[in-house]
Amino acid sequence: MHSEPASLLRQFRRYPAVEFGRYRRFVVADHHVGWVAPDFARELATFPQVFHLDDQAVLFHDRFTEAADRSRAIAEVLAALRERGLVPGWRGELYPVNRRFEETPLLLMERAATPLFGVLSYGVNVNGLVRDGGGWKVWVARRSASKQVDPNMLDLVVGGGLPHGISIRDNVLKECAEEAGIPAALARQAKPAGLVTLMIAAPEGLRLGVQFNFDLELPADFTPRNTDGEVAEFQLWSLDRLERNLREADDFMFDVALVNLDLLVRLGRVGPDDPDYLDIVANLRRSIPFVRT
Amino acid sequence: MHSEPASLLRQFRRYPAVEFGRYRRFVVADHHVGWVAPDFARELATFPQVFHLDDQAVLFHDRFTEAADRSRAIAEVLAALRERGLVPGWRGELYPVNRRFEETPLLLMERAATPLFGVLSYGVNVNGLVRDGGGWKVWVARRSASKQVDPNMLDLVVGGGLPHGISIRDNVLKECAEEAGIPAALARQAKPAGLVTLMIAAPEGLRLGVQFNFDLELPADFTPRNTDGEVAEFQLWSLDRLERNLREADDFMFDVALVNLDLLVRLGRVGPDDPDYLDIVANLRRSIPFVRT
Image 1 (tube, rainbow over the protein chains, first blue to last red):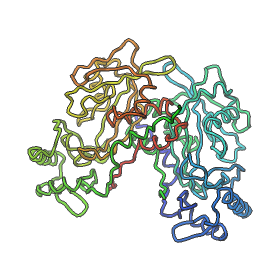
Image 2 (image 1 turned 45 degrees about the vertical axis):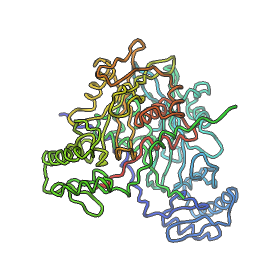
Image 3 (image 1 turned 90 degrees about the vertical axis):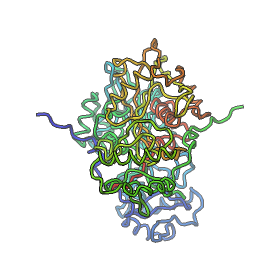
Image 4 (image 1 turned 135 degrees about the vertical axis):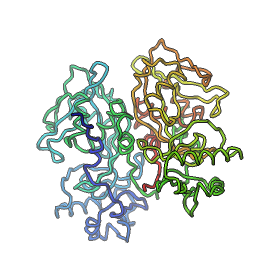
């Protein structure tokens, strides 16, 4: 019996859609840069020297006029909230908060807090591709069981958040080395290939993000080798297997699933013949609503 | 003296942004499918047997319940408006009007009227690529001086609107043959590569569209040959030349410029090093606002 293949849209249905009306705007120096859930806003209200709340927004107190001062103040708040168990998954990495990627940050914030403030975070991803006749195979990583976030789930060969103070290019090189043992001379051949956006209501808060994607052709005789203990194993998959998995399972991390869907679209594996094509492509670059101020 | 290269965002600035608040919704069978400018709405009001106007919308009269009846009625209206000179550029091609690409059309409408009703139209495009060492060159067409729309402007090697009654694939094959003399066996190797959306206030009305893009690798010894008189000449361009032209000139048709920008992004020629990268990518898939009903 022939049955229709399952829809790739399942990957966009793993988390509820974000109801922005439920959130207060997070405003820094008159710029709308995030979204705070009501419960967390109540916690922030207990720090009136740092945050001012009105009906619709959580505002960074305007007595702070420098990024460094704001960063210090929010670090103290977050340290206190962490003691109360309200900042799970502390990373010890500072992420920039700004209106636009290129702009000087308005403040720096512990990575684990970014979903709580609903600020945009950035990441880099590398699709590790190996020629397979006229087509491609792709390296897939399984995260180690000890990873704080999404242990055992399937991942890209290389990917990671983009902290403050490192360029996209340098981060690609660094993650290539750490996660997959890819030497710099090879990693430098990674080519930018567009981006996907993330916009989900995750258990840890709002995950709003922009993922910069790269494609890297790896030689057939190269095998990725993890150097930081974060990967349990690497597997070389056919695009058929990748597509089937994305249709039928939630084995990949959510953001990685989107990067893989974008790859399948760009390589022409998913095209207009798929009844969900327009929705898939639209969802890969959901527009994240910030009020321009 | 070194100067910053001009911004690729110029291509998105060639037409004013659409102020949807100025337009009335075009509603068919309770579905919002288009946007009508005030002047044109006044013309439509002179056909009360076909259109009903309220404060915010132009509604197709609900005595029409079948697509065929609506298509016949709007054809009569458009014939009358054409006599008054209000439907310039008549094509004699019927375009489907619907809420979703895959759905059965709510009605068919003369192509030249689609910007007047602000309905979504669809097109197919083929990037004609030729290997050039490790990179690519791209075929560029100059439209013939006698073309009704955009005479003499630069175009893709193959591209065209998607009328009712032909599949995307078949349209690619048909346009490949007519516009560039690409035989079917070669044209069938065109691979889907994503899409771009159009959303501009053009002189002829609102151009809202979805362009399905394909990449086709052409052999180095193949030269496109136009068979329908619509192309004045073909030129093989380096990606450098393409990028420079898009930065500095408005030589390409607007929609073609977007397809070319998408190509440069996908091939990694325009990447995160470009300060406008995020805006470029976001603008390539502007979300077209229809009120889901």
